Image 1 (cartoon, rainbow, N blue to C red):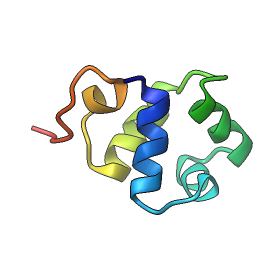
Image 2 (image 1 turned 90 degrees about the horizontal axis):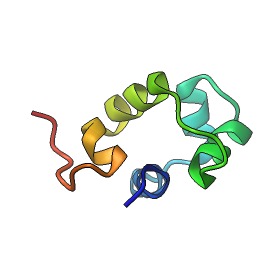
Image 3 (image 1 turned 135 degrees about the horizontal axis):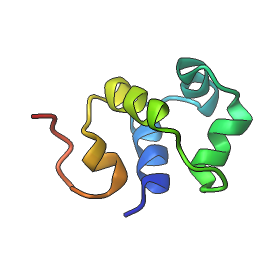
Image 4 (image 1 turned 60 degrees about the horizontal axis):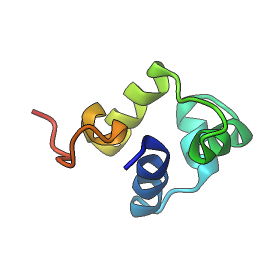
Length: 71
């Protein structure tokens, strides 16, 4: 599973809007929507922030692991 689907699923699982996540990341809703569509690659700084927001590992978001837990 690609990070594109994972970040959308995590956002929806946490009942957040794209605007809320974009505000947390310090970016626009339009740019965040582009991350979710795969039109733009997710910057590492945003990956780190999303890991903290959702309390999941970067390996999970990137699709390397199906384990959400942070060790």
